[in-house]
Length: 555
Image 1 (cartoon, one colour):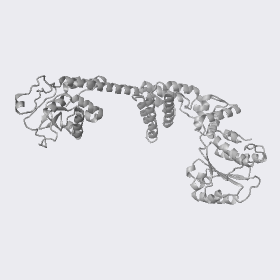
Image 2 (cartoon, helix red, strand yellow):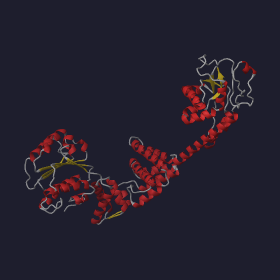
Image 3 (spheres, one colour):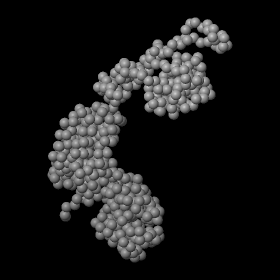
Image 4 (cartoon, one colour):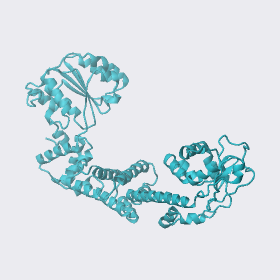
């Protein structure tokens, strides 16, 4: 007998032997046992997961002379005919090459004839989604009301291409991708029967390469067995399938941990020299980083598709990385995979990606910097509050009213010295920059101004908690005095005034809310003010100079 490939030689002969599709096979067995056989079925799912195999087992089971518990005996003449493809009543049709309306018309004509030998006439149409719209329409009536002896089994990898009128007339079963553990279990059984020695890592590699398809995994097994003989080892499997060695990925993460740019360039050169495709390498690196992320996030390696030894390595390596770092690395590699397919020089893109990874700032370092910056901000706020409290004017102990106050029958307030850190200019006339010469609706008294000056830092802290964006502008302003009932706020330049004016109403309301005084505010540029000495003593400025070598810009 001529040689049969493993996928055909070890094709399942009964429902229980179909791997990982119990939700389908158990239903089919029960339907046969209870004699609830439908006239049309649709099997959908990835290629190589058992759709056509299940259809053939079903065709044998419903016609078997010695059926037991819904399973064919595989020994009677009917079972042997179907298994060997000699039965005239089990017709397999390739939908890709018989997709026209003429072929479907021929099928409709053949359906009229009763089975020549079997109880049921079974039509298995593979890749049914390839039929034309006209062919589907021609099949529709026959599929809806076939003769009682005719059963249709439609198989497809793309059920969304089958027209809805066909879908609604079939019992639909969705076959799923086969888990890697199930594929390994089947491969291990076949290797034992074939007397082929295979190490565990080779089983994992072949199963992963199969990508959920048993047929593909068995084809790869045949290819490796032809290359290696009766003893299959992982290093030889990698060579036979031209796979990227997993050790390269672990070396990559070692370079990332050490921030080794030179090593990254040398690794990219090694990838190219060994003949690996850049896309294949990046896709393997993406899976590698994903495995590290899973191990880092869950603290275990159960969800990693690898041998036990590699799972332990993933757990150990993941402990050296932060989950956020791994997530950023995975994002960088995934974006590079999409971009490298369209660049003229893939090697340069590969080198750029590796350099990005090894020079990526660690999340731990970023968190430390942010924490230190936040501490400096708090210290800066406390220092400014203490400085303002020390410099703020305080009322004198002499509270006796002046003679002029008694004469004018108005209250007298103690004189106040202007803060030394803010130059105060009080011209006799109203400021020329004012466009509105009328007095405001809420005139500010000297007493109110004095209280506002004393409690200005308290007001700033209240604004900072509520609207930090407004606070960032207000810290550049200082209360200067009262002019014609307006509370004048001094600003260093027109830019600060322009950025603060949109919040004028909010500032007025905040002063009333915090200090209990209703005011109307206006702005004035304070000329000749310098902050050079204050900036030199600013803790934040000092930190930026010490940590980052910052230098003041020349004005």
